[in-house]
Length: 378
Image (tube, rainbow, N blue to C red):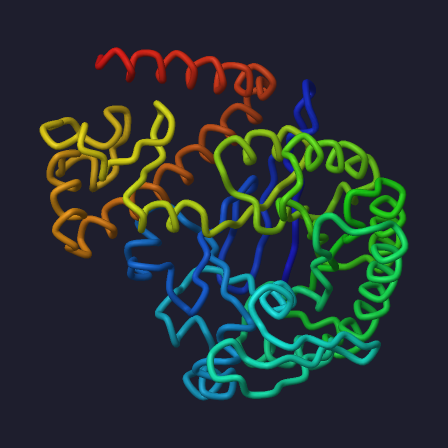
């Protein structure tokens, strides 16, 4: 049974502290969800992901439908058993990948025709099919099928697309059937037009779904535009339901999103930059593959107590990366996921102590000071 409890709201911002319950555990919010696109957070085992403190991960409906197939995963006992993950799982609808990866897309009222990016095979994704696939996967939280509107788009197209997404939501709800084991979130679209965003929010809110998501942001617009949209819709969001900002996950975006009342985030960014030899630290982003770290025997982040930082140096990890040893990318990815979990811990503590605005201010101050110290080699 899915339940959400709002524990505290900050007096100096829209930041919120909460907890929600799924069939696979209790999740504290704000929360960051590592992305397990193909039933794996890239380069990491499920046990390693759990050891970072992650309480919930994201699986991708499109990729799992294309390979190995949702029927096979259902035969395995669902996605939790298939990937040996005992925590909660959120699955997206596959809509973003259909519009960003698939070929020969054709949108109609009934759904989306497309060709697989893997082998060119033809498929047809409808709102009903998106829910049925997620039911086979057995995720704790499902997302409606929506169109992730490209940026920039003109007002008339965005309105037409957003209205269709709303109609698709009604069909998703009918297929979902108010399941007691899988929660369904509706998705707010509307591009960068505040009036369309607010109208979509009010309509989705009227369905009294277990949660609500904000889609179509961080797709090319300036960060200031994304924050402005969040400011516009926050007063209209349901107070007693979790709020999920889809596909957003840099440290700065988490700090700003929580400040504006967001509870849930996901992004491939931490593990993606890890696989490219870069890490997130208390001193900002560090590209450990660079030559300047060849004889640097400090940990990736002197203020981090993760396994990688406690046991290995920048010089060693750089050596691994330059030698094309996969361990180097694994250590970077592990550290980055761990960093995100500790950042979220600090955010929760600040909200609990009613000092989130101060935390936000100090976050940027400390980051700038640390960058200066790093350049000085201290």
